[in-house]
Length: 113
Length: 113
Image (cartoon, rainbow over all chains, first blue to last red):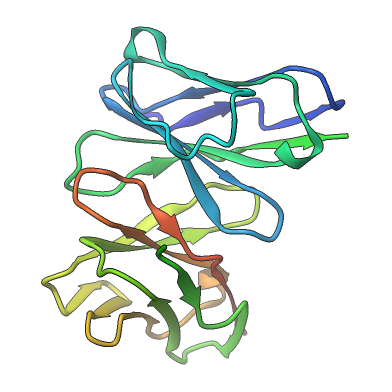
């Protein structure tokens, strides 16, 4: 069974540009989460989808961030326009239900220069 | 707000010894407390979950304890091996069914041969 897959693994963009990160969860997992780790800090929750619906987006930093999960399968996280402080590693995770753990992808390292 | 502290940023230990990592939290007791392993360039990998009404959980060479009075969890790796070298993350989930994890910054464990 394939795990959670994230694309790209690395992205370097200039300030002001747009970047879209993609996450393919484990097949059949209704729950999908986005997290972010900025340099030297802990991993922080961004938002949670249940199927295609946003269950909780309280961790989204501001309106430059837009997450979607059309059809309840893969998800995208768009940052527009990117700022320097958006640099970090963005993790996606998925889970089937709430009785166990979430499975994380390898992360996308975003560098805004 | 909830804050998590993991005892040290780095821990070196001799092969064969028991590694003990600490996770302290400051506020409410979480419904779940989980331990993850993270290798460089990879996403966190779930190891063990312990619920608020459990004192101890074991899995092979791993053991987790949970003391809600002390607001502390201890993570033990017995008979440690160089392959156990990684960063270990503690994560709290306030209520079952959220996966809005609050992570610690992690402890970097190095097992010396």
